[in-house]
Length: 257
Image (cartoon, rainbow, N blue to C red; front, top):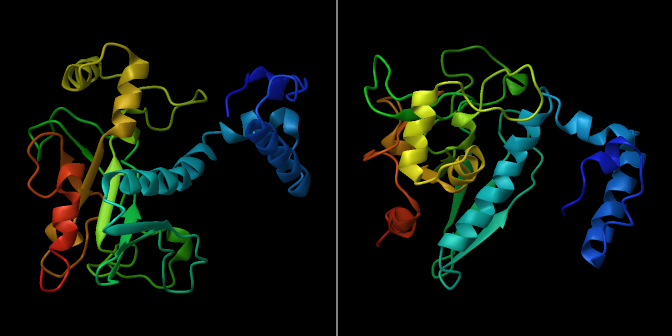
């Protein structure tokens, strides 16, 4: 759905600019949602763009975008992909996406995570090549005990981890609304050359579409614990792969194949 942002802010009617039936249905859904949860429609965009709210919305959106990405990449004759909306139970986390191999019925859990905000670096002390980190840990609000691995995932809790690069290029803890880019101009120029784009908007779009995937065992430590912020190298990372290797790596998890 595309509409003028000021329409929600100044209270003007949206029905006049939303012609297709599906747009009108979505508009009616927004109206009902705001009424149900007592959200002022005139301030809806201001609420959604609040820097405390936006990360939560983008995190949930990544699950749906990730599921759409998997459906696009995997052959539907062999694989089915389902976006799950399960209520997390005590001591367990909610499962994002289910991938089923149709020929055997074996099911795999896929976990979507965003990159660490503003985390793209051309080099760092431990990683001398362009890289970013993935925010891969459990919500602290759901912790029931304290230990060194309390907020970390363990191998076996999910079968596939996927993220895209986008969050890494957006400035962390910005004062302004929206998603301003990091201020490292050298890094931004490297990224634009890497993706073959010229504008900031093209760069953002390219990072949204650049998905990186891994099997948890490949990044876990010797105790089977997955790092809170695993590193992804932009080029030739042996632990992370692109979409063209997804089906092959999933088949490696199937017994007998």
